[in-house]
Image (cartoon, rainbow, N blue to C red; front, side):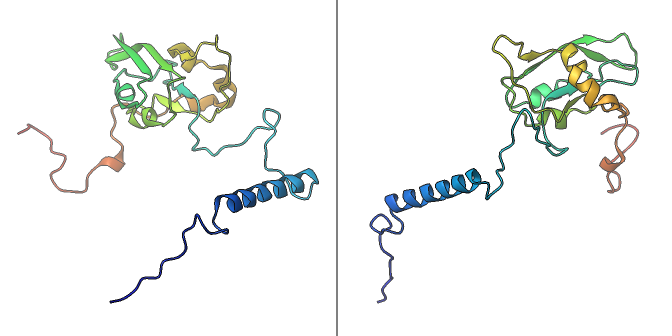
Length: 195
């Protein structure tokens, strides 16, 4: 029969005990504080709002709706963004379009920004590239401010005009399948009558 060596109980050891760990943490905090106070070490704190942090292009910030080249909203009111939203913060009311090439358009498109978790699922679900999350991260405001973004606000935000320019006009062709989704397997895309 063999024996297993077991180390000491961490609670009873001075090295791993509560008091020693707490004192080590406080020592580290005081060390960094003193170095930054005496300018021996550079502080990584950003002095916001005087200095703005530059996020990457992939950052998911405030929403905006894209437009067609003719200036109309690109959304076709398919409800995929609202269905895919885990926070259920998107409300769409659809209407019939007078344009024969477009079946529906949103009469009302609203995002409750206080419920939104900025996951980007709405952007990924949209088949016509109608909704995007931009790089704007500063959304501080007052309680009486309107926190439900409407279709008109999402299309014509003043921040977008100077920052996005032509990026708000989506160049994606509607009802055209991207070549990357074509299958290389034989007989997968059949033409003619179904089963």
